[in-house]
Amino acid sequence: MLFHSSLRKELARSFGATLVVLVTIVMTITLIRTLGQASRGIVDPQEVMLAMGYTMVGNMPPVLTLALFISVVGTLSRMHRDSEMVIWFTAGKGPAGLLRPLLAFAWPVIVAVAVLAMAGWPWANRKTTELEDRYGSRGDLQRVAPGQFQESAGGNRVFFLDKDTPDNKSGHNVFIATSERGKEAVTSARAGRVVAEGGSQFLLLSDGQRIERRTGSSAMRVTDFAELGTHVGEATATVRASLPTRTRSTLELLRDPVPAHLGELSWRLGLVLAALNFAVVAINLSSVNPRATRSGNMLFALFTFIVYFNLLNVGQNWISTGRVGFAPFLLGLHGTVLVLSLLWMNRHALAWRFGPRRAADRTGGGR
Image (tube, rainbow, N blue to C red; front, top):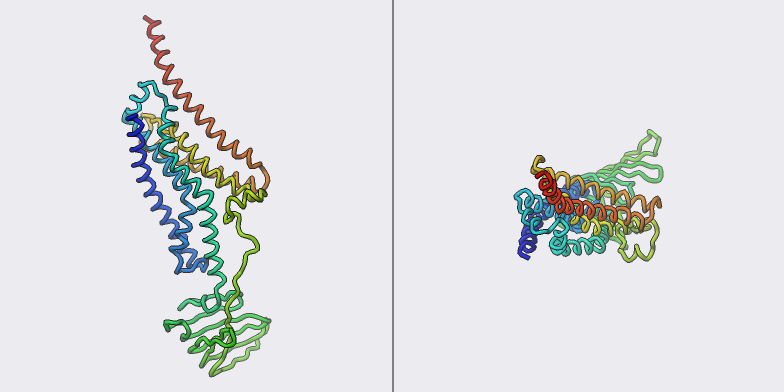
């Protein structure tokens, strides 16, 4: 039908524009968050864009769902406001007749949400975790940043070094504060360079001073030295005892259906079901109240989106703790939303079909 094709074209334009705006907003928020992690030493500053890309892949399912929801509500609201839907209704079609063209437009988006939620979400989280683990397990020398105090991998040393060579093998104004084996020491030197010997790395300091005292004692020992070596070997890579649930593939969650895995699975599957339900809910939310503001429908749609996704988070927590079952929650939340939306849609259709007839009967009876 001509109406179907024109509706899909307008939905495509609205969806594209909405998606660009949402992606820009999410990218800005992600960039600020990733830069904050880099400043706190969680993410390598040189890998900020890579970590940002992984985070964006993980955030795309809700972004696509929201873009679909907003585009449908906005398009149908405009058609109601401009009385274009009157032509659709006078042709004997009710709101339920919009399901076919809407689903014909929405199914690629729903498929993309399913792929990203089931495969992209765990992959992105796993890659982000690997970045954080690799950066957290770097050696002491790699932790030293020019002009900044940095803590060692074991947490028992604090380094300060002005690096001034391209290979980062030497520098000036070296400061090392150490606390281990019941002793506290502060070592400062005018210069230092890295020396490899026997498979280990040493920081060879020159022209410096070392102040040492026992913990809890006020007696100090000050030593001036012309040259002093301190071991700064590479830190061993840390291996997590168990990977977070969000990094496990969907197949792994299905193979081991413990409550924590079922909770994560409910979140991923809930993203797909939510995208489908939002396409149906949008039809009911698009009817325009002439007394309401132009943005009233959109504000109510955003409120509905926030409530729905908060329920997804609550359900994931409840399933993970065993407070509710996996299947009852999915059926209770998503099934209830779908049934209520269809009933609401049919109520509008019945009111449109029988309302004018009853009014005509009353008018004829009065005559």
